Image (tube, rainbow, N blue to C red; front, side):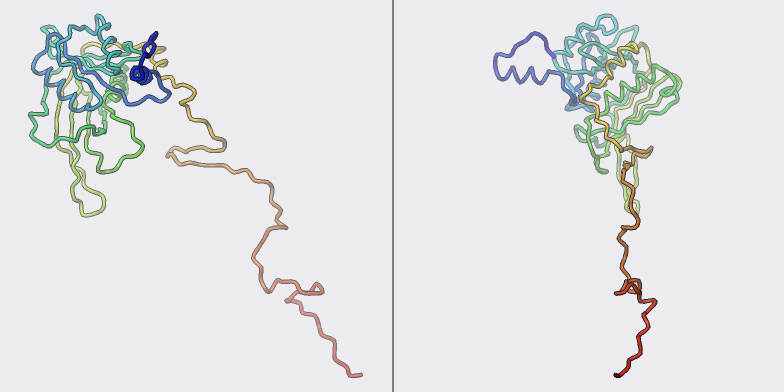
Length: 302
């Protein structure tokens, strides 16, 4: 939210309303920033990530003299200007060649960021295959023990999920699952691969899945990291009361997501229970049933 500003026109009023905090936030946008000194590898890597993130991304083509780990004031200014909570910064120097910094903001302040070095890079233009349509929601796969045990890698996995998850949807059709991003942590390196899903004929109703390398591909190594404290991290993930779903009585869900309900009924009187009427059990006049017929009196003529 932009503080201490009053709208003078309807257009500015709509702009300020769009920047106000909402109960349910919309799609997160990313800003991709080029540093003061970049190599051809870093420049092309930023363009390829921008191609994966469109249309929810902003690409800064001019050079910006920014040092995220020394002074994050410029990043916070760009975040307020473009209303972006995620960022990717690329730079290159002799000490840290081919450098990428992934990060995210909370309340327009840096929450956490990770510096990754590019050791191997394959661009989108180097892979002569068809790409996915713009705005396709990718499927994210994380492999490796470090993503489960190491604290830095766990936070990095959370950041990459936040960065590449795409728009939130309520339902997905099978033909819409076209893009896969696979991250592997092995021997101190992080391998990022991008695949296109091909649905082949299998002779039955379920198609055969085949993955085709689409690009870009990265071999990354972690260099530096800046993580938020546990208290600030919990504050950033805190949900407002209005966003929490109201608990409904007597309704629960099992481990598989099945909805279970509990009904409370009064004690039932079995004597008044309506059962199926049978002709053989029907009562006749005089309290005699059909099973014990009454003996007829002999007829006498007077």
